[in-house]
Structures are given as structure tokens and as C-alpha cells.
Length: 275
Image (cartoon, rainbow, N blue to C red; front, side, top):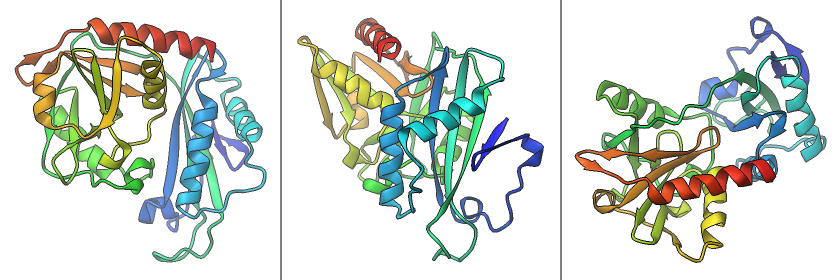
């Protein structure tokens, strides 16, 4: 089922026009949310990120768009769908009309639900994608519906027998990967690209940082990272809202350990169940 502006419909009933602004201009944003055993994982963080993104893009936030309203809309959409783990995509886009300048800043919303099985791969290979850059700046931290760079980088990964690609910013520093954030471990120092490097403001990224800030054995740094540091790292891992943590085993000819990342993963799993 789909939820379009509060109405539950079959996918065949969805009637988006040729004037849809997400289609024509990428004038939309989305949240990818995991629901597990009836619980919307880290929904408060998703909600506040969504509100901040809508304000940044000058979308008019409806008065009814409270935390409780959107939580109920998601649960309403899931109700009756078979499964225990779901990928929920909450799409927000400006209403039809206008050219680059929209006729209105009012929005429509669409909730898409799919039952999934989460697979953490035992072998996971990554490399750099260097054809185009992910430009640094606040707009890159927002999950807009314009994901062309992620798309072509994912095609490159598929063509080269890779599981993922590292996206670079215009300064040729590490920004993120095609489907999430990246962390690099060397000794007891754990680095992840700062938001100013052009990475998505990931929810799981935020939770991992919170875990590490409370851990006495590790130092977490949000900073710039060069591709050379990945080559020299002890461990590397990727985060996103659905998988949680995906350890990286190979970068070019380098093989990584999994000692610290497995400990972090256990802490994140506990936080997911208790939050």
C-alpha cells in the first residue's frame, strides 16, 4: 500500500501528473526509515531532520505535521502488510506548478512501505568514484530527490564488481559512500567526514557518534579525510538507516580487520532495541 496525503491507495492508483516538481526539478526530500517489530527506529531523529530540511528548502510545513501525526501515518500504512522489518520511504515534494520558481511552497507527501530482509555482507569491497564530485556545503547534507551522483556511482560499482563507492568532494576529500556515511579507524581514533565535507546528515551516523563520545577507549573526530587515510586504516565501516553498520573488508588491495567495528555494532544494536 501507499499513503498519499493521508489516503491509502494501491500503487496502480497513484496519479502523479507531468507537473510533479520532484520529477521535473528534483524538488523534493525524503527520509528512509526502518520499522522493526512494530517499532519505528530512531523516529524522533528522523522527524527533526525532516523538519530542518523542509525549513532549509523553504517548504511550508503543514500545521498537522506533528511528530505524532507522521508516526501514525507510517503505522497506518504498514498495518496489514506482511512482515517484521520494513523499509519506509517518506517523500515530501512541493505541489505541482511553476518553473524553477514554484507556484506554491505547500507540499504533498507520499509514504511507501516495503517488507525487507536485512543482509550484512561478510565480504564487502569498496573503491573511489572519481568521475564527478559531491560538492561540500549544507545542501549536500539534505536528502533531496536528486540522487544522480549516487546513481551513476552505484552503476560504476556494479560494473567493477564492487559493493559500494566512496564519493569525493571538490577538494578530493572523502565525503560519504553511495548509500550512507563512512567511518575510518586507525588505532583508537575513529574519524568520519564532517558535515562541512558534503556528507548526508545521517541518523545512524549521529547515533554512532553518540556511542563513541561516551566510550573511554576511543576518540571520535568529525573532520576531513583523505583517500590515503583509508588505505592506511585498520578498519572501515559504513552506516545507514536500514542496515545499521556494514563493515568494509576490502579497499583495493587492502584488507581490514573487524575487531572494533563489531564492538560498535553490538552497542548500536542495543541502542536500537532500547531507544
